[in-house]
Figure 1 (tube, rainbow, N blue to C red):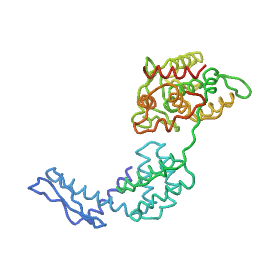
Figure 2: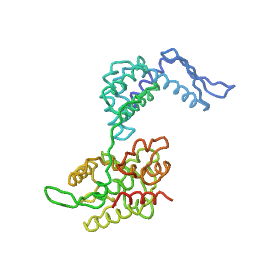
Figure 3: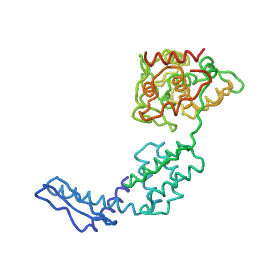
Length: 376
């Protein structure tokens, strides 16, 4: 970080040498003011109301930074993308950096690496989206790619209206069918090396189905979060084992403790006690530490194979919950968004609810009533 800071200061000094004017005190306006022109011939005025030399320095600094931004936009995209990714790496989560880096490496750099940013336009960036679309990338992938491009352009104070084709394919999501839900809720065994054993994380899967929590949110649960009549969702553990505060501002929330969820958690507490495991976490490994999402998924696939259940992902347990609620609970969209931790503009039913073969007071009662029609 110190090295980057020194480089930035050097660039500013170069710009200051080219700036042939300095901020002057305007008595009638009681402020410092300086007007400068960048390489594109654009003029801009900067002001500062602080008295004394401190105000003059601040006013000049604003002008220098603007000129520096202009100089940066004349660089090659390959170098600028590398610099931007360095910024992303130290200011955001590991998972976000990995996604941004992947987008740039696979889709963006092959198109713009040797171009100057000033020579690009909306069509340049739209071409990247269109190319990924022609390669059959899903709508979600295209939206994430657009987000990466927009964040990069915004960093250098440029923008381009990039669209995602409306007919881009959606990834097909699967859910557990009623027969599979019944197996999950009644059979806690699986087969490992031709031996029938208890599935260690059976209650993790069960709770995910009856609450609709995201996989990382279930994993992050501690016993202090599940006492009383509420489940407190206070964060998530991503696939890299990092604790985060969730996907959006609605991810930190409270959910009612339904009767079926309480029964699952009571069983989990008794199971850990009998196994002699003491842990703050609700779903720890045998050593009391948290499992990785990779480990959970491996166990879940083994359980499904043991019972001839069509393979679904851990995240699709959340889709299962939404489908049950949408078809059987009579829950309003606002109530469902509250439980799911969705933003107002999220198409909760469109994205998550899938058709089940048969027709599917407070959120707690609606949830218990809905699952009572599924679980025999």
